[in-house]
Figure 1 (spheres, rainbow, N blue to C red):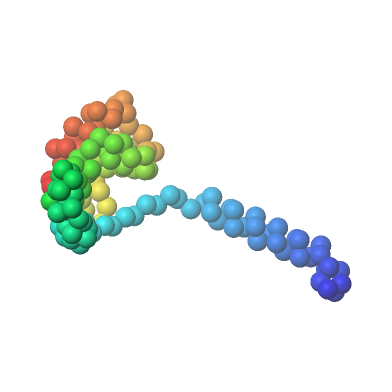
Figure 2 (figure 1 turned 135 degrees about the horizontal axis):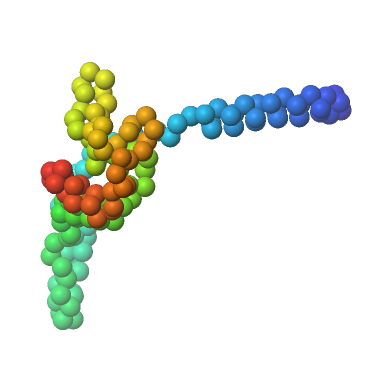
Length: 146
């Protein structure tokens, strides 16, 4: 144990160098977000099957039990079309220009082509006032196909 602590200055120095290097590398990386999702719906038959056995007892007590679950498909669609979802989406970097200033998609480079009259991609600056949340929602709803 004493052998380890005899070289404690060396251990502290090496630890500090690696900590500093890891912070510098982390700060030099750009923020990159990628998400993929597969949305599915279920009919809720498993949940309702367990409740159906209590339906007759509940009817004797004068309580009406629901016969079907929530339609999860419409819940998903309504969530995607909601203003709260768009507001959360706009909190990520480069989403606003992708909705408001994208002209087309270049298949070869796999990148969006932006309207140079609206947005400067290299400097990340708008040539007009930054689009409002409400204006963005209108464009988002026109682009969205559900």
